[in-house]
Structures are given as structure tokens and as C-alpha cells.
Image (cartoon, rainbow, N blue to C red; front, side):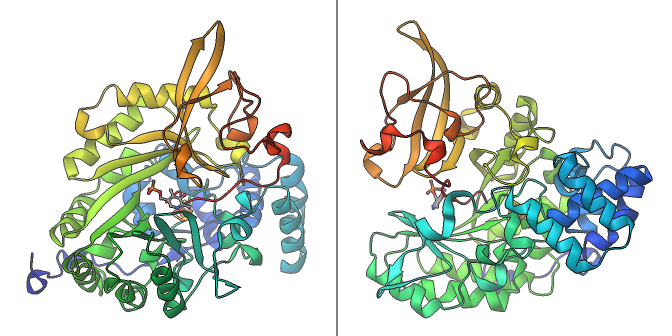
Length: 457
Ligand SMILES: *Cc1c(COP(=O)(O)O)cnc(C)c1O
Ligand code: SF4
């Protein structure tokens, strides 16, 4: 498709984006059939964790006849039992007696602090230095890839209940890391020719209007060193209108074309949690338009208890993606923040689900990797469980590592049916993991401070 050929389609579906927030929650949970007491509890949970949705999610994705068990309902609506009752009950009491916003926020903040809101010390460990000053809004963890967090892209068309960036959406200030200083970012990239891929992430960068997105993308086009520009987004799931009928949909596609014309791959790293998100015809239309503009789409999502924790959900999702011409890329393990206790799937089960799904799809879907933990030392993949020299162990390898020498080398951890995260694992046949230095090996990971951030979407 040439620039001139990109025309708006299906204007009849050109509904304007409208967000719903916590103040609509009581009405919406009533629609799901929740009792008054349950609705109050959900409101209390939503005081602590972010809630946001829109009418496309409400009317085209959620199956209200199956709510509150519907997976898409569970993807966006807080659940009454997501947080410990002893945290939720006092906030529910505050709501009942009409406490001030200030009181509510103070109580909510105290609960948030217990939820590891800063997994992986994402600021401290991954923000690069440039000219002796930190470069906020950029993360440079793996040599070849830099992440950019655009200032105006730090929200989403809807929020996922399991989001690992949840803290930044509820105004916990020190998690707001973003930049609007592209001149400095470009200087940093130029000084680091090893960076061949830029990943623009958020929040969701596609929440930005195209003219704003352009301010972040355009300065990158002249950088010969870049092979790809990636955009992490859930907009294909939560607001496919972004590529079809929004007023600046065509401008976005033109921008993608310009990336391709500059001799780089434009890749959307699309977050899809459940095959239902792929069902509306509008999604196929949006995907077709992005592909016509020369963009490629790769998909990723975490494995989430009660939403997508069975193999047939994943294989159905990967097969539909293949049919639509998008490429399965990552299955992640839910990270150790927020309501992780509620959504976590044991690693042993995650590896089983992955293997069962992977073994039932064609080779063209087996581009996917996982289940992968984005942890302090890098992306750690759980290959499975094996009996080695009479001992039951996890077999693991690193897909990405701060230290590239560690990538792809198998290593072992003691079998633990309850382990849900890297910090729960202990090395097997060795006194430390390969990514632990000799001194660090003396201490278990869990006590070595927070885990490192990575881009889950
Ligand atoms: C996952 C991730 C990347 C990209 O890794 P790829 O394997 O190239 O997709 C880059 N930076 C961080 C911090 C990540 O977590
Ligand atoms: S997981 Fe991604 S799309 Fe979902 S709320 Fe978090 S940043 Fe937004």
C-alpha cells in the first residue's frame, strides 16, 4: 500500500474513545450481577489498584452473560478477593462512611507499599547515565535494545488487572519514569552504536495521538545503527479503532510506512491475553492495515491464573494469530508485584501449559518462547522439569541476560512445586546460579533486593 492509498475505513465504527474509571465501577459491577457487598469490596480494591476501561472493551469484548467469570471481565475488572481481606475491609469501611479522598488515598497508599510497587528497582538499575547525568525515561538493560518511555504514553486504553506497571497508574510518583527529551535520547543512542533496536513502551505509546507519537519516532529514522523500532502496545486488543477509524489512524499508518521506508523494521509488540480479544472483525481489519503499511506484529502476554491458565487457550490464541499473520513471540510469567499472589501460576504448571500448547501448534507458531521470567539478571526461561542423576530439577536457560555470555546456557534449580518466581528457586548441582557472582552466591536471591524490570508489553 502506498501512502496515498491509506484511507479511513468503516467510518460507521468510528466511535470516539471514552474511558470509564472507578467512579463508574458500581454501575458496571451491578451489570455483572455482583451483590451490594461485593461491589463495595471491588470499589475498595480499585482504591488501591488502577481501574480503567472503555466502551469497546465493555460492548465488544466482555461476555456479560458469563461475567463475573468471563476472562475478559477478569482481565479489566478488579476482583473482590485480589487483595488480602485485612487490607480491603478498612478501606471498604472508609468508603461506607464517606471518608475524604485524602483519607482514602492514605489508606490505599499504605496497602500499595506492601505490594512491591517497584519490582526490580527499575529506576536505579536500568536507567543509563549520559554525560554524568541519569537519562530518565530510558532503560538500557541488554546491549542491543533500549527502551523509551514517552512522557505522554504512560497510560493505556484500558488497564489489565494484573499489570506489573500498576503503581504508575495510581500516581505513586517515583515510578513515573518518562522522557520527552528526544534530543538527549538520540545523543545517547548515537554514543551507543551497539543499540540496534529501540522499544517504545509505556503504559501504551499508542494512546498518544499520531502527531505526538511522531515526535518520538521521527528523530530515530536517521539513525543508521537502528535495525528496528518496536512499539509495545495493547491497543489492538483494547482499541483497534486506533488503526482503522480514529481521526489520526491513517497518519499512524503513514508513520509506520516511513519507518519501513527508512530501512528499518517497524514491529508492534502486541499484548494479547486471551483468544477472545482477536475475535472482533475490527481487529483483523486493524492488523491488515498495519501489515499493509509494512509493519510486523509480534505477540506476547503473561500467563495468568483464572484468565488464560490452560494450554488450549494459548494454542487457540497462537493459531488465530498465525491465521491473522501475526507472530507469537513471548509467554511471560506473572511478575512479583501487585496482586501476584492472586494471579501466579506455579512454574512447574507454567512449563506444562507452555509445552502442551506448543506441542499442539504448527511450526509456524513455534516462534514463541517461554515461559519467561523478566527478572534481575535477565529473561529466564523455564524449560521444564527433569530427573538428572537421581534428582528432580528445573531446567532453565536465559533468553536475555545483562551478561550476553550467559544467554542460551542451560542451568538447573531444585525442584519446588510451589515456586512461582526466580526468587523462590535454589540452584541444583551448584552453589550459585550462573548469573550470581561468587560473593553474591552466598546469599539467596530473595534477600538481595528488588528484581529487575523488563517490558512485558
Ligand atoms: C524483553 C526486554 C527487551 C527486549 O528483548 P528481546 O528478547 O529482544 O525481545 C529489552 N529490554 C528489556 C528491559 C526487556 O525486558
Ligand atoms: S499490562 Fe500493559 S496494557 Fe495492561 S495496563 Fe499494564 S501497561 Fe497497560
